[in-house]
Amino acid sequence: MKNLSADVAVVGGGVAGIAIAYQAARKGLKVVLFNREEFAVGASVRNFGMVWPIGQEPDAGMTLALRSREIWLELSKRAGFWINPSGSLHLAHELDEVDVLHEFLSLYQREFPEAKWLDPAQTLQRSSVVNPEKLRGALWSPTECVINSREAIRRLPIWLGETYQVALRYGHLVREVDYPSVVTATEKWTADQIYICSGADFETLFPEVFRQSGITRCKLQMMKAVTRERDYQIGPSLCGGLTLRHYASFSKCESLTKLDARFDAEQPFFKEHGIHVLLSQNNYGELIIGDSHHYGLTLEPFDHSAIDEAILNYLHGLIELKNFAISERWNGTYPKLKGSLSLVQEVVPGVTVVNGFGGAGMTLSMGTAEEILHSL
Image (cartoon, rainbow, N blue to C red; front, side, top):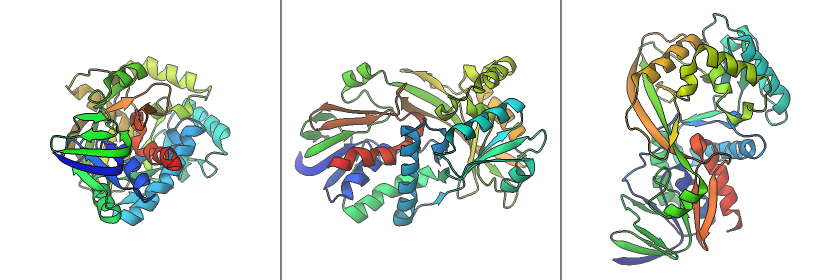
């Protein structure tokens, strides 16, 4: 058993843990970063790779998301990973979708001054793959970005080690945290500050804290598609009316009630399985498609083909998707804390839990970590 020391110990090598480690390291602190797997395999790599400010809760969530965006753009240059500030299009093919998007613009023009309404012709100029049939227009926002999370989340720890000498302990299961000690099978570290960023595996350490917090899990189904069409580019990330009832930013729109009722009458399957449909494209031209949402502390491990089929059918109504094939299917699980952006709690002096970002880990973690480490 080796005895080692650091200023900051971070348990969990997904996006939240990496964000904490980065903010601590750039302050000149000695950091050790633990991850039970040899590389991140959880929600941080099983996602769209989207940084999505436009969907976040008004005020605090939007502010954190926009700051996270700035940090991601800075890190992509410094650490050398791909990022595309492609923006987003919320497509409207029904009148009630138009109403919600116009109401959103009236409510949040200050937060998103560059967001604007596009008519059908302008929409098709932004994205030539959009289905023009019944297209009424779209909300354009330039603030959304796409990252290839599988590559970035692997690259960043290596870069932290090279640039800031962060001690990387991937493939090291932390079996005990007893401040100021962090114990693995072979090492015992002492640290002035310890951060627990263990994602969906939140019961291993401090289980009583998570039980009392009300945090739960969300399981999603996603797919990757490849197309045989040369130079097939979707432009901005794309979504439609289903997304308007998924993200908190639209919840204050009174016109959402009418849209919600229509979807429930036409397609109750969508709400039953928490389906909304997003499409992003990575640096290899691959299309990331999803997703569904099921909540609970214990979730069925089995995926359902009917969910994938419903997602793809809806997507075909949004865009013209030709000569494509599904190359991957997967599910992911992330922690969700209802009614809050995240769980940030000092459980004992010197030990802080950072968790519960829901589906917004890529969008909120960087800004949240900067706020947490501000006083160090």
